[in-house]
Length: 167
Ligand SMILES: CC(C)(COP(=O)(O)OP(=O)(O)OC[C@H]1O[C@@H](n2cnc3c(N)ncnc32)[C@H](O)[C@@H]1OP(=O)(O)O)[C@@H](O)C(=O)NCCC(=O)NCCS
Image (cartoon, rainbow, N blue to C red; front, side, top):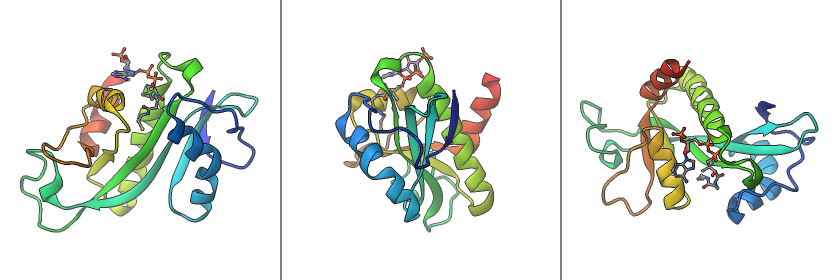
């Protein structure tokens, strides 16, 4: 199994993670969005190119006032660079095997690579439901109390440190 950037030969048609909008987006929009520089998608594939999981990333900015408590301390008043982990999913038949964790680790490394060139202090996620929120909390992502959008944030340098400790 390997993780690589989505391409036209990857088999996405049968992908099903149990959350239909995440399946549909991969099948119908991921490749086109990539061609239009709207997002980057990375897929976990087997030798037969069948996709077992994926995540997508884009870049963004966040005003310090929209950050979780403690994260804004000492920052300037303008938007702070961040990478947005817009989607992450694992095929239903392969959930619970650690593949979501592997995809998350890869996403953090890709975000850090981008951040090395364009300065991203945070990685943010938009959890699709409460289950996803619980999953992201496991990795240290923090809620923003009172935020109706429900976006969660993690400092990218802290995420990298946590990965180092895992090794
Ligand atoms: C959420 C999802 C990506 C997890 O993938 P997975 O491969 O099953 O997760 P892993 O096996 O790598 O689990 C990693 C850790 O997260 C935990 N975890 C997995 N799903 C969880 C959930 N819904 N709530 C809380 N913890 C969860 C696991 O118990 C494991 O913890 P441990 O190492 O302490 O045992 C997967 O269930 C999925 O694709 N769900 C549908 C789509 C979705 O919700 N995507 C995320 C939001 S966009």
